[in-house]
Image (cartoon, rainbow, N blue to C red; front, side, top):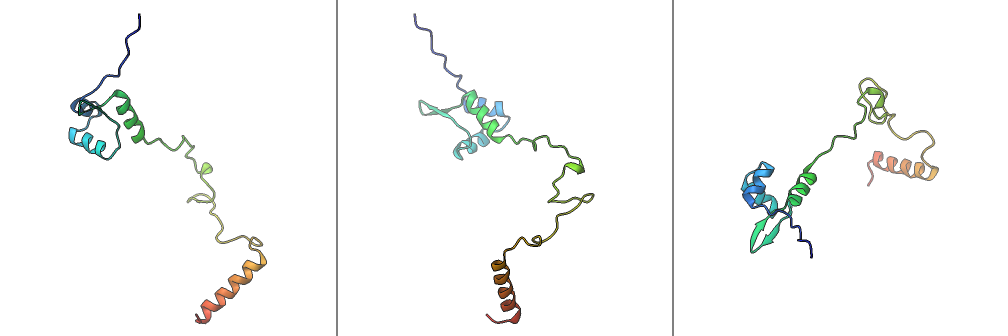
Amino acid sequence: MAEPIRLPRLLKEREAADALGVSVDTLRRERRRNRIGFTMIGGRVRYTEGHLARYIEDRSIEPCGGRDRTSASRSENTGSLGGPTAAPGAGPGSTNGLDRHAAHLSARMILSGRS
């Protein structure tokens, strides 16, 4: 004998809104903006627990990876009040000769006032 098919429980809008802790209007607004999935049964909107779980998952914001918040762990490039800061500009010898020459000509044209 064939086993019965297990169907997900279908929630009405009021039940789904109560489960999420929002108003029915908010739930409808989220549905119209395609932020929450739904199922149409007989021309009526129904939600499954899976729809609600995905909506919650999509709206979850995770903390920043559990990083150590001590000053020693901060990025040296961003700097902090207690730590060293990154040196401004390009390091010596990091620009090749042709680029240096083009930058020099550009600066001369700008500073001379000619266009």
